[in-house]
Length: 425
Image (cartoon, rainbow, N blue to C red; front, side):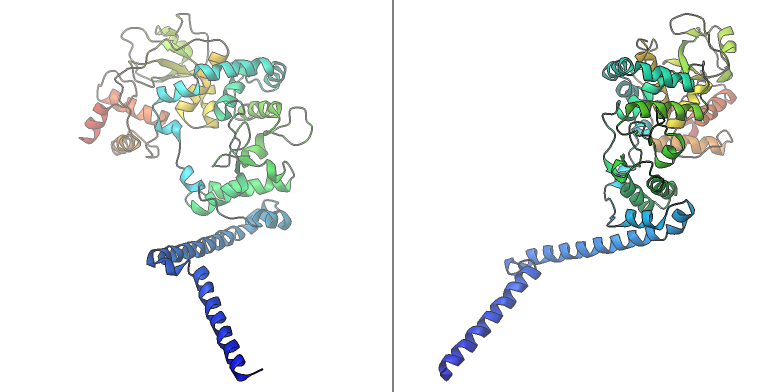
């Protein structure tokens, strides 16, 4: 080979190396030659990937630190390792956890959606389809079929909307992202316990953003405690066996304290000029003061009763039994519990409410409700948590303040006028 030929080949090889290096730079830097903007985007993408990797490492380290607690709950190392294998945070879980329509919508709006005509029709169809199974569950638990159906309807629209999230991943993410809510750690470990006990395979554990699973929307600890198999065969399949879901809902309500033979409550009519010196009396005491059922018939229920005026004295009125508070064990919201009770009544054939919701009612925001709670707390009327969520403790405090200050009607209902009086705003 001549020297000239050798020199040409060396020069060609060097050009090839330079082209290869330049090409590698194009891929590595995200086409830097396209301009500074493309290079910056590439650097941001690379940094984002590194950030995600670091976040996943932190996530895995956080979960691994929980292994002693999981082992104490009976979760084996094999089950623990299998659950963590390839597990990454779910970026959608923390943002979804803030959505709670039962607390953020006016009750009448929530009720219209939760117990509307279409859902009533589906509930009646389900009552016919599962008539025998419902009768058997009601016989075992004392919980009426319509109440069981209404819970099923509110939770998943009779199995139509269960949620498809991987509960193990979602709960792990919430435990990691929400250290202020230790419940999520407990529920993640409970989900592992379900796998350990072989109550259900991993692929079955699908549900909502908060880990609520299957037709009854049981969180893992509730599944372990209350889920039952309708026929006693196999694990309680609350995802694909409606009869297991019906049995599990009935068992949950019965174990929570449901009193057989007692209604959840009923709509009532207050006589003209009715005063409310106490929101809590017996059904008999309210009847003695002229309160009747909404259809004008005498009140037949017995036992303790609470007067509930969700829109104040101008709106519908209800007497709530002790079973109403059992419905709130499912979801601690008046909008939810009242909707469940009324949906059950409508599935059983009841019509629309007799009372009318005021057209000019003003719905207070959570911050406004929290301001009322704070003001009542300072005056010694309210002893609950300041959270902007009104329940019976808030209504009792408002009623006590109204009574002490001769405000009529003393209906336990918060209005903008009450807010201004208490806060000066």
